[in-house]
Length: 87
Image (cartoon, rainbow, N blue to C red):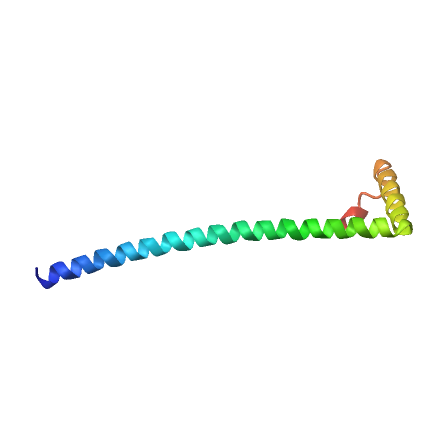
């Protein structure tokens, strides 16, 4: 076996190593993306629960929110405040 053959084998092993590394990195990026989506959904859910708890603990705030939604619905039905939505 001469040095050219050894060099070719080394290049082949290096190429296999690079391909293996790329596959590993792709799987890590995919796992990181999934974990990020799960964390985002968890954070959103926690915020919604906190908002619900706040409304439950404060009847005045709950009434204000309900009245505000009613007023917004009436405003939208009358097409009065369509430009206010973009503010």
